[in-house]
Structure formats: structure tokens, C-alpha cells
Image 1 (cartoon, rainbow, N blue to C red):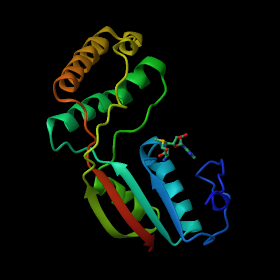
Image 2 (image 1 turned 60 degrees about the vertical axis):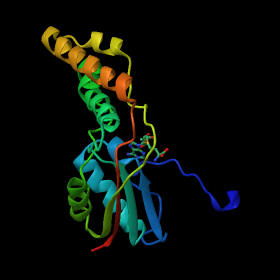
Image 3 (image 1 turned 180 degrees about the vertical axis):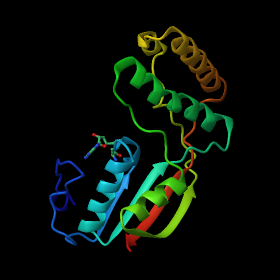
Image 4 (image 1 turned 135 degrees about the horizontal axis):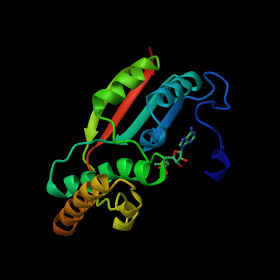
Length: 174
Ligand SMILES: C[S@@+](CC[C@H](N)C(=O)[O-])C[C@H]1O[C@@H](n2cnc3c(N)ncnc32)[C@H](O)[C@@H]1O
């Protein structure tokens, strides 16, 4: 198997592959890290250029139970806190299925199948230290974020943190 795996380090906005040179292009849990809609459309267009078919999977902003809500409550704080504390963006809020489908269509793709998958897994990775919020300069914002962090942490302590459902989208060039 290892002789068939060729890691490549590159910017996904410019994939170093010929058009239609691979059968399938896959992005698993990467969408949220790709910086915003313009970047995402560029990257999806690149994926559709190099392959006739793409598969995307990303966490959905949907909670079916308290433990999934606990994950989302902490995850949704990260974006605001990192921006205010450090002036740089953390991962984006998770995209809804409709948002993902709209991005694929903007990139010239046609969605063949989409569904939400239940994970049934714990997911504690969104948790970040309360002390980070101390870096937020505006006092009112800081107090409000601290309150929300305390609520999210209390949910996590009480229910644990579970993985929300995941969107699976299969699309081809339109
Ligand atoms: C949430 S991680 C997911 C990684 C991988 N899918 C996995 O399951 O391990 C997102 C990754 O996207 C990478 N990334 C962000 N912008 C990128 C870009 N323009 N081109 C290539 N990779 C990028 C980040 O460096 C990060 O490693």
C-alpha cells in the first residue's frame, strides 16, 4: 500500500495535478479550515478540475442531544475568541448541508448524493482554556465570552461532548 501513497504538500487553491488526472478528490473535515467562501469555492473548483468526482465530509452545526450541543457550544466560541484575542481567525463555524451544496454548485459541481451521518463518537477537541478569553481587550465582550465559556464547559461536564452528525456530499462536474 505505501508504494501507492504519495504525500504532496501544497496550497489546495493550486493543486499541482493535471486536469482530470485522478478519479476522485476527497476533502474530509477540511472545509472548516479553508478560510471562507471565496477560498472554498476556489478549492472546490480545483478539486473538480483534477477529478470528475469529489467527496466532502464535514461536521454539521446540528445537535441531536445535549452532548452534541456541548461540543457545538464550545466550538462556536472559538471563532470569536481567537479573532478578538489574537486578531487571527480559527476554523470557521461548521457549514450546514445547504451551505455546502451551494458552495459546490458555485464551484461548478452538481451534487449527486448528500446525507447526514451519525457518528456515535466522543468529540472533546473543541475545548480550549478559559484563560485565552482573558486576552480579549474589550471588557464587556470578555465578560460575555467568559459567561458563554462557563455555560459550554458546564454542559460538557454534565453531558460529555459527542460528535455532531457529519455531512457527506458526493458531487460531479456539472
Ligand atoms: C481540520 S484539518 C483536517 C486535516 C485532514 N483532513 C485530517 O483529517 O487529518 C484542516 C487542514 O487544512 C489545512 N489547510 C488550510 N488551508 C489550506 C490550503 N489553502 N491548502 C491546503 N491545506 C490547507 C490546514 O493546514 C489543516 O491541516
